[in-house]
Amino acid sequence: MDSELIRRYANVRAAMAEHDLDALIVSGSEYSGFEGSVTYLSGFQIVHRYAYVVVPADGEPQIVFPTEARYVGEHGTAQLEQVFHDRPGEHIAATAVDKRWGRVGVYGLDYIMTVRDYRALEGLDLVPFDAEFDLARAVKSEAELESVRESVRINEDGFEAFLAAYEPGKTAAEAMAPAEELFVERGCGRLTMNMVLVGPEFGIAKKETRLGDFVLPSLEIAGPGMHWVEVSRAIGKTPSEVEPMVEAYEEYHAAARTAMRDGTTAHDVHRAVSKGFTARGYHLGHVTGHSIGMTMIEHPRVGEGLETVLRSGMVLSMHPHAIASDGKACLYMQDTWLVGSGGGESLSRLPMQVFAGA
Image (cartoon, helix red, strand yellow):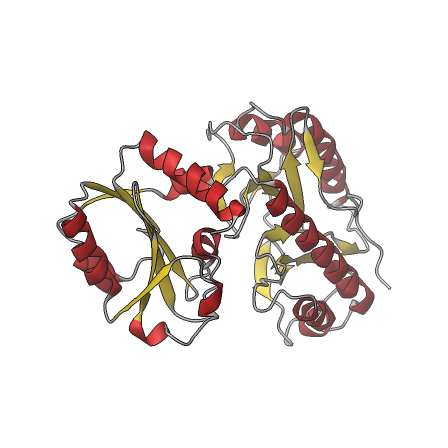
């Protein structure tokens, strides 16, 4: 097990000890987009199907696959003992009984774990552990930050490819295609989720969608290191009703540099960066921001009433979704930030502005 993985296990086991867990089951699934949690604790990237990393408080961890997943990934990359079982939940339950585990935490109990495996675990004292696991992995190491910065560079280059391809009247698919090609060439594989907003709503970049004079791309990718980032800017001729939103975005960017510091809360950051939008009478349709890592959306979210304390080394995706009172005009731009001791650092070189189209 390499030093980075050892560091991650130390953080996770510290969280387990704080909550009196005898073991932790970390669920990952390619089907639901939550494969990064398994990679985080094993080095193995799920190519198809699903898997679990089982972490005892004492003893060696295992990665457990359904039998049919034996050849749907590069299993030599896994740094743990690998177990293949027709019903992984039955194997995990039998292990829990044999080891006399009491409280067993589960990351992915609501959204990831399969029903058949959950049923096999009936009788165990299961503890939901999503927020706790995410907080244990929220502060990034220098190795992780290097991966994050690489993802940002790839994302920026993809935005510029979209910008170069965009023309009013083109389809969303035509504009997005060069960016997607670049992302695959640069090692993202399938870890991209790229859209355009149609009005205030997110939409897939379809060939049926014709782009107008003003377009809001939403670009979200993970580079070869599997750390997700989100960087995008509005493009085109800014409608007059959107111009005050652009001013509010500039104010948010300035506020984040001060507010996003070690020891502040997610609530306080939300209040600071959303002030310019709410003061102008806009409401925010999407979350203001969230922690981001090997899973695209991690805890904590940045929003009203969320009192999680931010720490230096956390990486946050920020994207205030400003929507006018009539529900039509909107502005949505994304940035990836690093929390620091004295304030936030925007990891993108792109200025916070609307970019002119071709």
